[in-house]
Length: 114
Length: 112
Image (cartoon, rainbow over all chains, first blue to last red; front, side, top):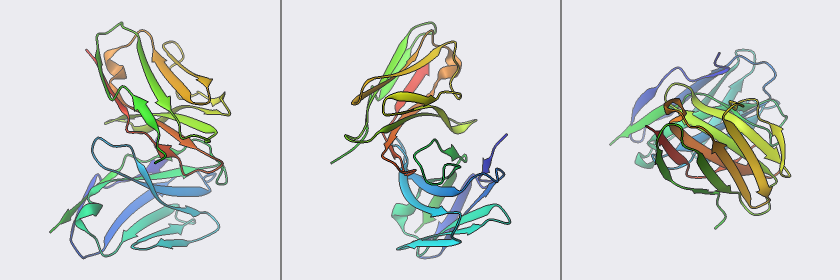
């Protein structure tokens, strides 16, 4: 039973355009959400996070939107660059930002086309 | 350059053999996680420690897996006996009072 779902295994976007990665969750106890980026043969690296008390968090080209009523979050990357090609994992925690384990989605492979 | 270090990077072993994976968390971090990545399940939390004490190992098959932190600079994950279905990439991650954990490069385990 996947509590965090990323329904698109892959996404192809042209360089310079906007990339939108989606994530849905089922556990209403989740109160903190994160996005991780992973290159082949490397571990995931933290990208951006959002607390459930917010609906938007922005960091440079990356913005995460949270819709609690729909149990949905999305990551926007604009403009997309070739170095953004990677697997993106959505993750969630029910620990109010504390260092407890994360529940991950299965990832979306983003491919930026030149 | 603070990073989580995992050894070995790759391990091929025969079914039934014991496998030990090691992790050196970032100095000063008080929470250490073990995750497993497979194609079917994605990234799953196996166990985690805070201040070297096990907090949650409910994601770990108890009969063959064990996780320990002999000291603050070393975490180990042991599988005995190993089975082909244990083939996966095992990640260690560490954190300090926050949810943004830092991951190591992983150990790719192949059990034949």
